[in-house]
Length: 113
Length: 111
Image 1 (cartoon, each protein chain N blue to C red):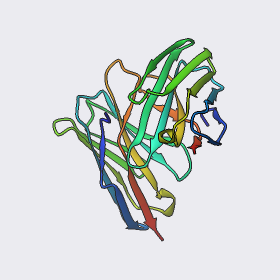
Image 2: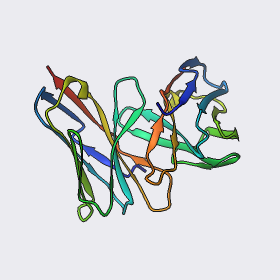
Image 3: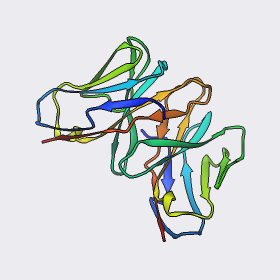
């Protein structure tokens, strides 16, 4: 158990509303990631963080922002949700043990109507 | 863009048979990893092979890496119903803490 929780686990929202997803880790690891998973695309990196207040964009960052004010929490915000952001969102951590293995949370299923 | 591509997209086998799936990638890598995802769950790390390794074993898993062909294969021997899942390869580059995932292979093991 990597000690990663995500909240909420399921959310239905309407187009144009802001949405924030939370990822929480219990072990204070430096690297955290947000991915989205869509059929036929595997996992695509949205944003990642390499420390408190240190974040960078991934390959599909448009329409998303992140914040990390504490080591244990990494927030993903959809500023104005669109139907194309309907997806399953996964948070992951890297324990920094040298080989880049990542440990994943249980996922958040987001539906934008 | 994604680095890895798995082949086949889907695989159906009988319990007890072996399952083989392949991953091809585009640019030089530092490590290649394989992950499993059971339906409705997060990904779980299975095995990692470094760019200077050619083969690695872990239980019923065997991974090979051919850097000249930019490809890897994952073999699951004596498959069980519990091996039913999607399998993803992921690559990284030196001094980079990001992973690039393929689209995955869905394996169904029939009883």
